[in-house]
Length: 306
Image (cartoon, rainbow, N blue to C red; front, side, top):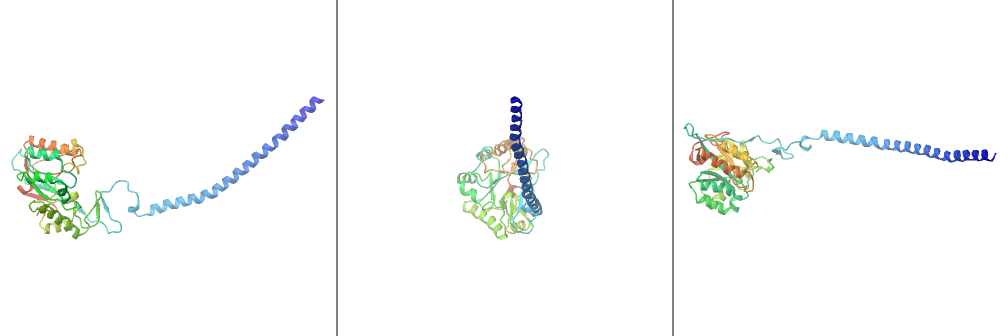
């Protein structure tokens, strides 16, 4: 009897102990349902706000949307559609002799220092070339300028502008460089470069090549009216001095009869300069005749030389 009473007491104790746990679980379920309802209450407006944000972003003008690829020419905000930019080509008269190539090497000296890897090859091998200098480059490279002036049979010095800004008379950005932006600024860029050259003891220039070698039609007319021929090119030798040495060498070494090659002589730390120097030797080994722009007849498109 005592044993049976103990078992009933144990069952009663277990039942009494279980009931509070069941109530806790029920309360917990009710609490979770309440939280879920509150989450839904906050989640729906959040989703609506997110959807509205996406829709608003889609409705933004293209100029405010993130670009998937970099643009070479960027229109200034709030302005009319940008001008059509021209990148003129230039060729020289061919040699007229089968198997004999005539090539004009042209170099831009924008800013920075002189690239002695190129300059030393030109002087040592007696290779004629046309050098386009900016006022900024002249100011910081007096020694290289003296090398040019001491070798007048090799080097023709021409105008690359005052501050190396693109000669475009509308406000645009080209390769990240802001254009001159007005006819007055184009005139200052051209005339300022010429004035700096004369002040440095260089003969008045006859050719002009602007930063990035891009122009709009009205700027071309303006520069021609100032008395300059505009120097395009037919072979882009070093891709703005950004190409590797091997690619640069192959590009320049592939120049044909009548080509005008553009490269840079102001980036002594870039690999491209090594390729330029090697390509000059490659062309010389082929028997190429090197000329300056002032030495031969030329043919430029977009009314840049006519």
